[in-house]
Image: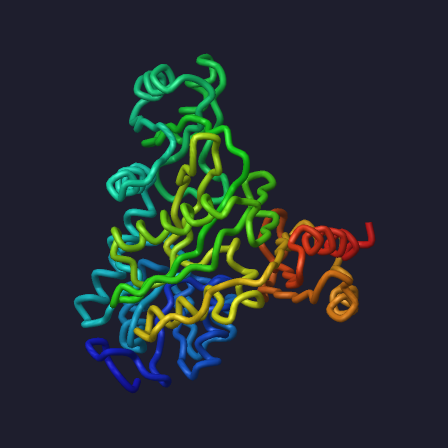
Length: 390
């Protein structure tokens, strides 16, 4: 280790401690290595994890393993996150050890709990869908009555990719939804009638410098992000409004690091859906489309360096899920052939190094950069379909 927090910045050679061993940590490690930083990863238990296989140090232990946490802290000069659904006691231990935690444990805790998150978003002055909290079946029933149907009931804690939520369209569904979601505390939201789903990846340094990558337009299938284009199909006014909302949240929450703000483009304006205090799948195209992509911005913010230029050229991204692998290895030669032959722009393949393909598991993504994001997306979707020969 070459330096400790308290300086203006952590110099190359310093070690970034990452909580989480997935693909987001893997891509952060690539950015860190490019700039001469080292990486230590606490995986949560997995050995040879996507991030751990490219980091200098992989600690294959649980997020509640005190010995493993002590080792991560001893090896690191700063702590950041690629996965937020963990006990924030890690952040408390890091602070006791004299390490900065970026983003802070307070932000991680806020993002873990939908009720806390909604309250904090409203305190920041941004619009969210009408919502209620419910801690019993009777409170769920009352929330549905107050909000009017349809509503979405969501587990208050630790939900992602549509897990732990259910739509309610009739009152006779309330009891079944309460049981199906585990009879736990819920957040109940009015269903938003929206034109498109959007996200803004925003970075902020400890000195208050803020940068974004513009606005991404996202398409989900079964609650999992399937594709992204940038720029989004928005007016200049609404684009400015979206980036201003993300910057406001970053400032109000005192973010140091990278955050994804997901929004709905609704008739009455932009509605913030949720926040992820880390890089996000919808920002993957920034790796090729921006001079400084989301992982480089995360690196810069975490080590205390100035942010880079996040402005993006037109680009598109499609996810590669485990479904593509169920009948054998995809025909990757088609991607390499398309890299120089795609009529609308260049194509880039990112595989995450996961050992087992499962349905709906994120195994990789492809991006393309060119002139027309819609044409780029069409080409990527066709290429993804061709990977299986079906």
